Image (cartoon, rainbow, N blue to C red; front, top):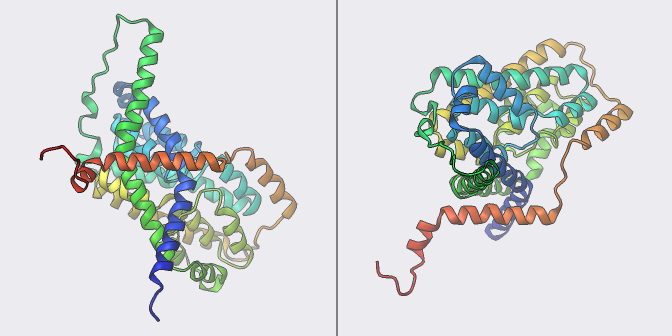
Length: 366
């Protein structure tokens, strides 16, 4: 039976638009934060705190990532902004891994829906896995250890201006760098990755994934690791799904593995890291994250599976879910649409040299 090409294209466009709306507010927020950090925190400060191979830098990067409720697409400009402001690859990857995997709202939901045993392993793994990924990057990275030119940025202040004027100028310069430079640099890869993710969702019907996830007997740690790497999920949104799987008979290790790979890997992030840092950084990120998540999954099964009783307490789950909702920022649809337009415009801005070649301008001699 031949596939319905127009219907597949329509499904891909719908899925891509849905993902874009979900992630665009976080992308814009990250661009603002990255721009302000780039302006306020000089390269010297980044070098002192994150521009080195020290264990303390990895701890700082991992803990700061664990506290931010930003998805794996939203963390792209923020992580790459840190990298291009002077942070080394190890702290950058530790931050970019920890941020989507875990945050305070996800931890609360995990304790309420998965129980203290799985949630504690999730919390500990949410720190150790990014830390180990950062440590590995610090050990085996080559020329991509730090961004070219990150050590030689001009940070001399204009001493002849009042302090408030200098600060105003620095903030405006930071926002300009965040959107015009970093946004244009990452926007096209984010949009490309979102489109690619939408195509995959359109080609692989959701009912196949639902059938696989809905049958605990078919689920394995290895299978869920691969599935989690392909699917686009957020750190908070997939915890109820995992809780339902475990309650219906899936092994506890499946929950841990999916909590790691499902939230921390997606195509826009991988494409951006590959294009803007390098293929070795992607190999470290994907290889270490997948292998460590599988290892933690098997360890969880070994530790808990014998005699494991799924945690299910409806009243407790509702109470903690209500507390977690206070930590989750619900973005109104109009703001999603506006930020989606911003991300698409940044992509078009980055592609303007190519577009000029494709679209001739009248009155211009070439």
